[in-house]
Length: 256
Length: 335
Image 1 (tube, rainbow over the protein chains, first blue to last red):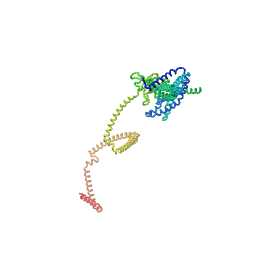
Image 2: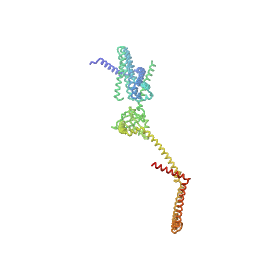
Image 3: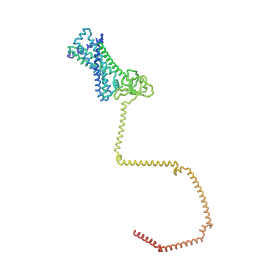
Image 4: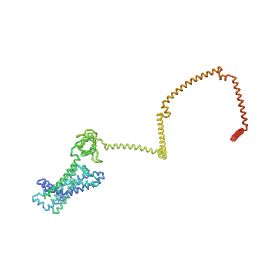
């Protein structure tokens, strides 16, 4: 059975990544835990990403509001602008845009960091010195990414809504109280829960792909660049694929 | 190194807690809107058709958000039971006679339930009570009514059309309408009518004044009608007239007695009348007297003729004769 070379390598990598993920689950929840390294990674991955995520979130809220306004005026429902933007941000724009920015920043940095450690044989040295490099490097980063992205998304949603409030007030006047009330009147639990839960998957995917690419980096410094690049590409793609899967699942479960 | 790590950890802690607080706040806000927190009680209402109402739709009492629809359950093919979840505080306001209707939020918005206050003084609701449905004109009913109205309007407009056509075809009417002098005449007539009415009013005023005067006893009529002394006078007059009548009777009797006496005297040759009628000597004397008078007048006539011929008076008589001749000549010429 002869598969084309591209297919063969694709399936090879998919299998390899699956095994890598299995290894994460096999080792991640066994002691001993690298707790302080996990906290440190959380700080780097989460807190340090906040300015970038906050800025993009603010701009997204503002721009979305201004872009939606003409269409809503056409339908004569300009007053529904806060409700519409609120739902759009909380359900889709907030999680996906934040995850993409997160993939660009964190996926590439993890890929590059682990890749350079790999090609400079620091990982092998760690193994020799008795530290489990997988636990210390991979598990902490993946967990940190998984936990931090939802927090980032929630903060980004809040900043986006503030941007949207300013956007509404560019052309019209709305009190913050009314804006706030309209947004939360429109939202329901079925809008918030799936959105929050899927961000865990986004974070996990970004961390996992970044670590896998970096951990399996080859061919010297050139390989580091390639693994950083492919980490971003693959994790961004995975974000969309997970989004697609999640929307199908929530639709099947009837929580729309 | 350790101090920096601690600061970083604090920053991370603030970051995570901020995110979690926001999430909790959002969930609380959403939960409060759907009445998940705080005390609630249930009310029920039964519809034939819920028009798309679903669980989670809003319930309003006199326009205020008071709860949400908890459940929509089919009881039978013509009965659907809706369970409403309402804020406990509203127990003090919702009465058992309050009515529930389904309406729409805005023109095309979500369905919602409206509870309208019913009669005053009925008891307040208890947990699980079933409220009555308010009959609201559905779109179908409205259409049906509208259809009837349309038909009526069609008939009416037909009639109006026929009437207008007849008016248009009437020459006389148009002549009247197109007559340019008509307005002036009408105006004049109106002026006359107004004048006449004014006069009539004046007359009526005068009449009323007269009637008033009569009432108050002024003027002769008033005196007649109102003066009591006149009646007395009249009475006396009548009495006098009657007594005069009585005297006349006596007079007549006396007259009759007198004529009787005269007749007797004549027959017995007494008095002047008898002498006149019966004395023959007196008759001869009378005849000679009359002859004397005749002779005297004849002599007077002769004297008068002599006067005519007297020179003093002759001019006058000639003039008379000339005038007479002239008149006769003029009369003959005319002939």
